[in-house]
View (cartoon, rainbow, N blue to C red):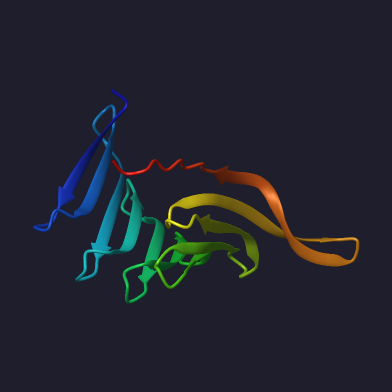
Length: 153
């Protein structure tokens, strides 16, 4: 056995804590989770074995319940990274922008869907400047799905 995870849940069944113990039974780390009144996770805080802050993640949602932003913080409270999600009128995620701590855009992922609303592509892109022009270039990280539809019986 390498580690044991002990989970605590609230009356709604939402995980509020996880304690991670090493093989010798000593506490290795702790995670504490908070939720809004709709059951959406708003905060994820990690602590080291001595109880000091290790990291913190804050989640923001739109009025439809879609995650619009995720901010990751270092132990000293400084911003580590930020992720911003964009959705279309049907609530489908169309873009995910990942920012560095200094606010510069590191990369983005662009999502497309077929006519039935199924997710078919995800392509990661970085902003590059080559030959005096700046443009979005695929990083090589892409996912493609082929969905075959059969007539109803």
